[in-house]
Amino acid sequence: MTFDASTIGQHNAPLIGVAPLMRRAFAGEDLSPIGQALLQRAQTYPNDANAYMDFSTVLQLTGNRDDALAVQSEAIMLQPRYTIPAAKPGGPTLLVLMGPGDLMANTPVEFLVEDSDVTLELLYLRADEDFPEEVPDHDVMLVGVAESEANQPLLARLIEYTANWPRPVLNRPQQIRMTSRDGLSAALRGLPQVEMPLSVRTTLGALKAVAAGTQPIESLLPDGGFPIIVRPLGSHAGTNLEKIDTPAALGAYLDKVAGPQFYISRFVDYRSADGMFRKYRVALIDGVPYICHYAISQNWMIHYLNAGMTESADKRAEEAAEMARFEQGFAVRHQAALAAIYARLGMEYLGIDCGEMPNGDLLIFEADNAMIVHAMDPEDMFPYKAPAMRKVFTAFRQLLAKSVG
Image (cartoon, rainbow, N blue to C red; front, side, top):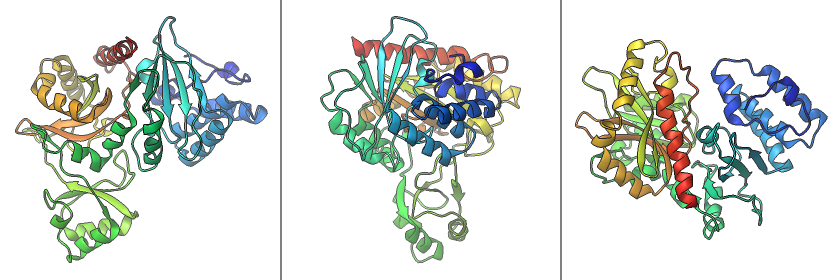
């Protein structure tokens, strides 16, 4: 949607939503004027829930997470339901069950239906409050709540709440709960042509014993020892994620990183023959894989934004070639593995971050319903991305149509 200062200041103006605001932030626009206008509107009209919710989004996008969550909580107390109208007429209404939290707490569904004929009804629920007996009218329902330690109680309650839903349901909560780091590695264990190291949840005390040399790392990690990767429970986007080679290095890590619990797993060297690491982001929609991005880096911990894709024409050329041949290449090579993952997890919409092992196996880093897939990259630099993303969005729209029947 388009918006400007005059519309932002209007009482009960429509919800802007995450996608248009993130698009501006992604393009480098200063969101401060928008934030100021929303704040002034919320102060002038303290019952204007849309102003609070949009202001919360601006705060998140500008790095003010704690303030953002506080404002979001106010918005949800004012009104748990938010509507994003379709850009085109005639399409279905998708009800999305959401939980409170940051931009990684729920499926970023707005990007999947942006500029489409799908109307979104976003309904925020809390684990410690009664769920509504009546919900907005809809054709299909998506459980958008993502797995996290904070969301597990909400997902547990949603299992019974959604069990006999009168409309088609996508991504059942019991399936989403399986996508925790340890749950996912356990669920995918033993699948042919799939490599995913065990991810083990452990305590600070146990890791200190390993660091002190009084307990072997193998007692915590049945499938291997050092080097390991370690991160605190609840860590995302590589925060405090490190590769640890020795007990002494583990001790140094624990001295600087707080946390009562951690995830550990053995380190997997997935370098290609040229010494570079490569990571795919794939959307698995109704069991069919679609490429969303492909990053090349000299570092094992790859995030698309720090892989140097904007600085390297060669990397972009390789990504373009990989996207062009994805359906005849990657999707064929890993057809059996992806089919097994789809069967094991049972989720209609799933994001997968993965790589390829030197022996050809599919290496899974993460898989969940909260990975952002988008078409925000500048087309002059990434002209090959828009066609690939249109395939993703079309597939999601077809999933909705199939679900409605």
